[in-house]
Image (tube, rainbow, N blue to C red; front, top):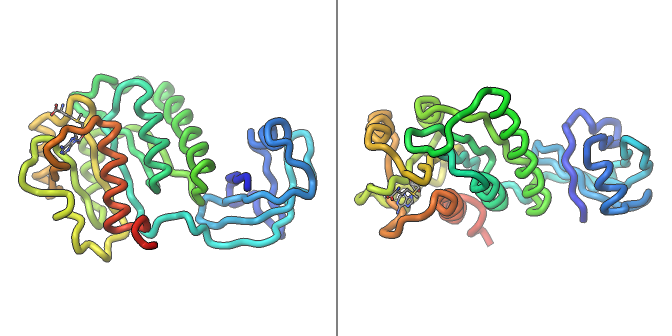
Amino acid sequence: MPRFFVEPDKIRDGQIVIDTEDVAHIKKVLRIREGEVITVCDSCGNDYQAEVIEIAEKQVLCNILSSAHSETEPNISVTLFQGLPKAAKMDYIIQKTTELGIVRIVPCALSRCVVKLENQKAEEKKVSRWQKIAEEAAKQSGRGVIPKISMPVTLAEAIRELQNMDLAFVPYECEEMTSLKKVLTGQKDVCNIGFLIGPEGGFDPAEIEKITAAGIKTVTLGKRILRTETAGEAVLAMTMYELGDINTF
Ligand code: SAM
């Protein structure tokens, strides 16, 4: 069933108003007619089954038939701090981690990033495009929440956020002692998890010094070196398997 996202304030008195770009998609691409039923999510974890009752020029009006807590959202909240990768890799990272249940992706400017931060306006434009990719991936994968793409942060800002999480770690290509399994095992009560993935060039030792000095563990992902766009989704999948909802069936 087609799935759409609206802001909570578009849901009132048993009705839902869709007045975003989705109106054109509903009319011209999906050719949905009055009387058909769609799923509408409020991005706060609630799914509504709604009957389309009026398709106007700039809005679609629906009657709520039923509502339920979104059953596709994971029981843990995982944030990926992603070292800014080259070109279209971020699109791929956003799409795959959305499918796997990420709640937030924070681009991070690190010393070995090939891509450097531009002015605020240019970064806002990039984040807005990335946010649309997250929305499309959330629709395709049946998520109840669209992951949030944040504005890029510095390493210091990422460290500060990671320190406030229930569980935080940094997969580091030169780490040889601490495994991801060791860090994840037994963490049954954690809700808020964050990890930082380096860019194609990896981490500068000075960056790792700051990370470990802040009390954040570095972990190895094994003997093979994963691409930056592979590492995030691999770590997320393993985290969801060990602590999330991927192994609950
Ligand atoms: N330039 C680095 C090198 O050649 O060793 C590789 C960096 S890797 C492409 C990008 C990021 O993925 C790393 O900074 C790390 O966060 C993560 N990563 C990839 N393979 C890893 C591994 N075997 N153990 C821990 N982290 C890994």
